[in-house]
Amino acid sequence: MVPPSTVAAAFADPRSWSRYWPDLVLEVYTDRGDEGLRWTVRGALIGTMEVWLEPVLDGTLLHYFLRATPAGPDGEPRALQARDLRREFDRRARAAKAIALGLKEVLEDGREPGVGPRAD
Image (cartoon, rainbow, N blue to C red; front, side, top):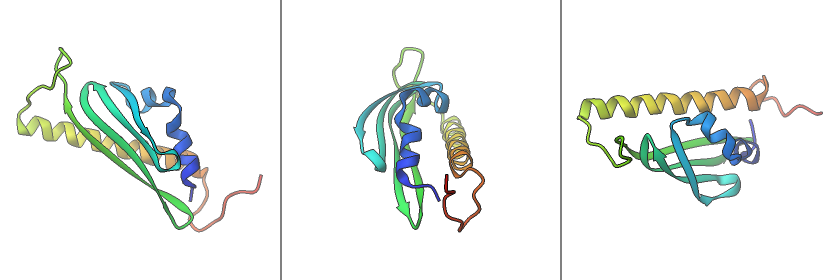
């Protein structure tokens, strides 16, 4: 029940990126405005990341895509065993869900489902 423009604003400030992804260095390669951002990723991972914001009813569905490989100490992709790679993917997926749910809680500001925005 939060419009895409409000969610987009939460990701627009580069200072927020280090709060959400402290071990990643992000560089925007596509700013899609109210539809989200696409970044190149360096640091603990090498690849790309995207937050796509889809308007749904009176709110926003947040899609998160991370296409990256763990980096070694030299900043180059590092080979991991399948089990370790799966663990890293699962850890990143849980972290992304925590970011999304945390934003939902803050941006909805306690509003109940089906209730319109507060009049200020």
